[in-house]
Image (cartoon, rainbow, N blue to C red; front, top):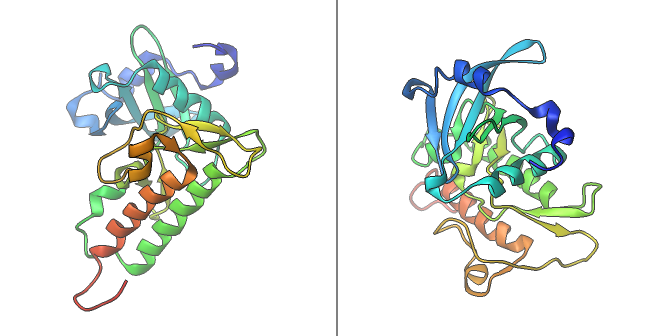
Length: 232
């Protein structure tokens, strides 16, 4: 990776990851996605044990070094209580592994049919995710803002206290903040059902593309709590 010295403090040895995941055993697997499989394990970080999540690149899903580097670049600079924290990475041999804080309640998609999720919990999740997205879209002291490009329920993680953490930035794009309106032209990516139709049709990406996707997340979050005859 270029700028290696800049990220050296985040480097984690493969041997430590192998030990933490019992060599990526099925018992430690907790999920997967477009980047690859996700595992849970214990690492010693800052002189104390910590439960973390390991996302291991599997190139058969179509992502690779660009997405790996993108997450490191972005999450090293953009820190917010509603954005998942990157704790480290490994790029030894042919392995590409990202290490994150562990969100014990996993993705929001795990609760799509959970009618026991209370209104206050749903509201807290909504507000938290909205704050994280607004942070990405605003000027936070650099000359860039971020378009996520894959906002969906499974990319909103939840911790013990139901706090929302936006995750999965491999497809994200940086945009300048020195204009009132930022439009990028890109090849459309994302997840069917969440993507902004205008972005899919034209390739023109704006923060409103993310906001459209977030609207779908909100619909999913609330529609399963809705009772017959009750307005949202």
